[in-house]
Image 1: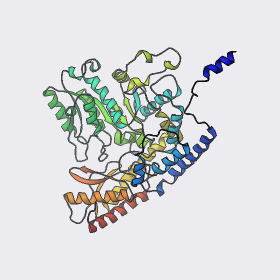
Image 2: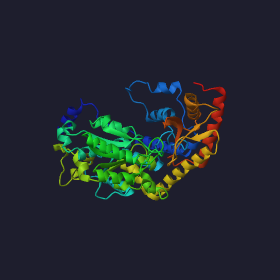
Image 3: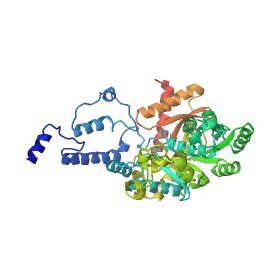
Image 4: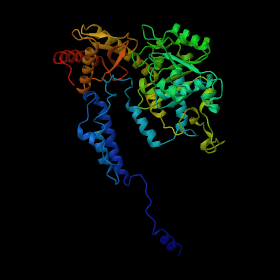
Length: 498
């Protein structure tokens, strides 16, 4: 009778569904194929163009409407292989030098895959992924010479790392409880200071913090494009006399334009004398601290109150992972911590671990740590330090190759591994020279030879090669110089097309 009633009760129910595969064996076979393809993809990266434009039919693929019904996973993967994997940004290629990005690594990619399979939310709690997240932050402290008592958190990248650090700086130097009363209650307008070479994310930070762009005072730079310490000191004095509250000085360990590194030791001393928060934007160069031949370039970074750095750059973690370190752990937590009833800690069980969301803006957080952890365990920090030295040596090698060519010239002082140069042209100046060099850059990209970007330094347009790629070799630099000369001559003769 009970069986009959149960059958009758379930007869009208719709079958329950899941996203798990019906046939795990088929998925396993396809997964092995995907891994094989991935190994081939990285192994043969040098044989492919750095970048290539997508034909019209591929662009049309991305305009397809929302899928309503299922299709086989093998077919889905085939579409990804044809239309996505074949047209990358190119930053894993050894001749990608457009922007300062890092070039990923296969172990890190496996870490990202395993993190996705495990599926943990890193808002916190008592589980292994949360402990690994904290461990990677601790390793970053060791790299930067920060004390174990310091705080930190993994974030999406350098922009968010800087925003977190500057938020703590604002709250620590505001003179009021900003979280309770808001920035409108600050009695004197806050002033933040950085060089005129600051990354644009700092302006976004000032706007997001409710202080406004004018709260960020840009200080002139010296001949090496480093912040002028005397000009900074004068600006602080001037602002105090005008009724402002100087709050924070931002030192840059590697500017985005040229790689210039501010005198971090002098900035640390000045910040201490003036009672300012000392923040270091180290998204490009902070990790030089682990490079045996070049660590002296960032001496003083260990004295910062906060540091922003990017493991997806010179630790070559797959995108995305940034890190911010805060010396005062209490100031860090008090800037962000909120404890609703549903996230209260318990003495035992899942909620007995630390709540990592108390140190940033995200409550839901991905498992970013595993890809960094696995690569560091496999290769060791000493190898990553040598790779940084290698990139800096390659930057200086490219600079020497350019100086040896009469048709090429360096436009900015060479600091680390960012090389700013241009093709001189035959008597060309101004906009005509800019058009020539822009055309050279675009043809290098479109021909799949190399990816450069362009910028302006001291009012002069130039090409920019940022070499932070562990796959780059000396012969890649030779090729870049040869092709730049060839294209420069060709474009000069035919005129700049398109």
